[in-house]
Amino acid sequence: IKIFDWLDMTGLSYGIIILILTFIIKMVLMPLTFKNYLSSAKMRVLKPEVEEINEKFKNADAAKKQQATMELYRKTGVNPFAGCIPMLVQMPILYAMFRFFPSSIQLRHEGFLWADDLSSYDSIMSLPFSIPAYGDHVSLFTLLMCASTFVYTIFNSSQMPTQSQPGMPNMKVIMYIFPFMMLFFFNNFASGLSYYYFLANVISILQMIAIKKFFINEDKIRLQIAENKKKKAKQGKSKFQQKLEEMAKQKGMNN
Image (tube, rainbow, N blue to C red; front, side):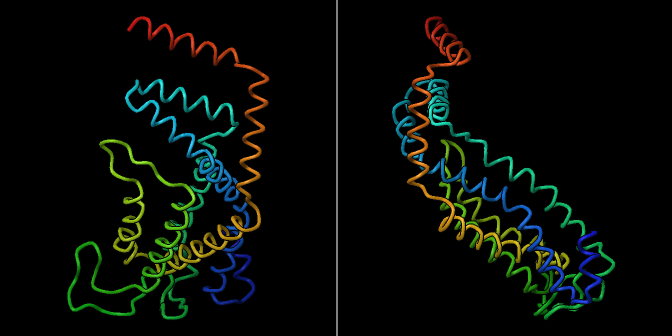
């Protein structure tokens, strides 16, 4: 709110203010975004070895497969949960923006492009009937937001292919359906909110392209993982790891 109020004093239109605000937020979150993409790159490099473990232990006890997978992560120095923390940190900001735009007094009756009121939904077409859970109008900012979300999902899923588990739906399918669900959910929400999410998606896509091209080198990551394996091999197993193996052996003997 303080950043928004500071930008408000410039006299710029609220559409431009939202653009600048979105850019500032995405730049502040850039280190977390980079860490998330770096974690995805490491997991992508390890994917063939993980698949080998899954194939080797496909008929074995799930605990053995899990133990072998965690041992691989330990040897390579890769944390499979490293990408989750940046996402969790960003959640409060996403929720704050979700609450801010519909309730912002400054945005009421303030238009931008085709939107007459950024605190309410924009409409480029009125429908002669009402669609359940969608409404009787078409919001262009919502369409742009959902389209950009779909493109971002394609880019993001190519970074970290999602594995489907037996008896579980393919997560990629759910990820691709989600943007279309948002189309219904956001059609009656504040156009300023859909505009913000659209801008955030576009900036995220550009960040992803820039990080892949200029900052992440998978060959260097592969070399670093190989170096980590050598270091871990010299260090030997930790006491905790030895304890886990002893427990696994005892469990196997008891079975």
